[in-house]
Length: 617
Image (cartoon, rainbow, N blue to C red; front, side, top):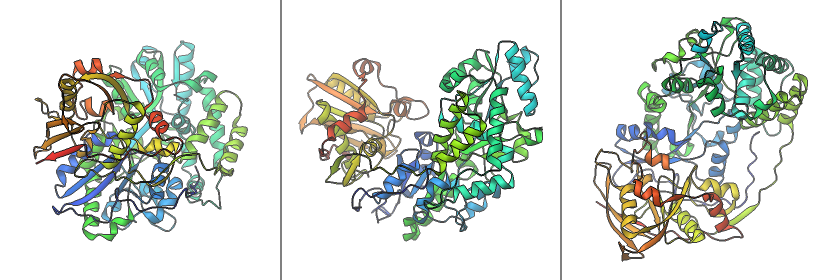
């Protein structure tokens, strides 16, 4: 996507919730809201930050991994204090430049290798985005298959092509990629020609592309990119690609490697480490050049991090945010971001232990041959479109280059999407005295549409405040958190209490379903009280239905909405749903996002929030 032209669908209104003007609570703590690109950041990083900074009151929100999401938040006047995004390029983020803090003069920027931080430097010298530790993409080889067929692991492109040919003669797939995915198409296209993209001409083109404006669109150059497409055409021939590979999934190519039917697959170092745990003798191989000295690894930051410029209005808050960033980019902080993933660091003096899977690519690491992929939104989409057409034979290298260029410079369709409803009342995301008004409004609306007696939302079910004004379908979908599971069933009052105890009480093995206040359940048609134990755990006290005591024997229709993995997985809360409840609460095929949109079609309003929870101290 080119620079997004933000068309105002309504007059921007002031919201209370995400940033706010007040940065300190009555208890003296600084309040910081941080949006997470994915819940993976809450495996180890967010609990660690809360431990490191007891003087900061964090609100962690799992948002959406796209710059469009932040464009929408900005349009409504509600950017968070700290922003993270994985699918990122300066091209996509240019519209936010004036909204973000310039970090170029901070000590944090000085901790990066120049070659990596320069990718994020604006033409005027400002640096507003910092790359977190690097995911590493390349080839994953099943070393045992190579040994079985007496074929040496390749060290350059000619040897790679020869290995693919020899495996093909043995009825083994030499190399496979999940070309069904946009990122795989993009990485294959760039990966096969990294030496060309890293020439002076290639770097100059990339700088120009990343600095384009709406008035001056930048297409492909006529020196580097024709060579890129020529090399990819040869690459397809050498890997014996088939038209049906456009439908290849990650699961299918992984199965081939596990079963010894495939010698090499595209993947990350983290994928390679996982395959080792599954019993396959895997190693990483680089994207090959003509000689071993031309080999490169393709990398991309685990996420990019930026700071809302409004933070600078409060010196104490500015200091707190900088301290948080320094912690995140420290060696210990990056270890907590990476968890068990096999990653590398873009920072000097940060020694994340090199995983064994990197044994065959250590020379690339030592030479800093770590190419950062060009990953604008349109690069994902156009790469998928053009690469798949090359695979099916619709384009040769010349035709692919011409179409790719045409798509980059084509005028973008700025058609205003259909408005589903115009919301008359705004509701704050922030968790207040009786819960989150925004979460309550959303769940009350869903329950109204579905018609159940009680609804329970667990994990974080909303990703932003409810704003006043127009909502499109996409905006309504993104108001709710990603990957929510919808269950429905009939429970007695006693079983409903058991459901709430599962979602609130710390367990005997010390597992805690409320690792953060955002995980306090939201309810509709039911109110409850819980006790804050003062040690990060809570205990369920009293449940009422419309103010009356819960009847243990009465049967209620109950719907639940949330992310099961967030609660049940050992790496998160480690609190599996009790088996007897799991048997009664059936996962529904109905899409919870469609239910929410249906409730609001035709201009319907969201239900007002209710005071669903009271916290006793």
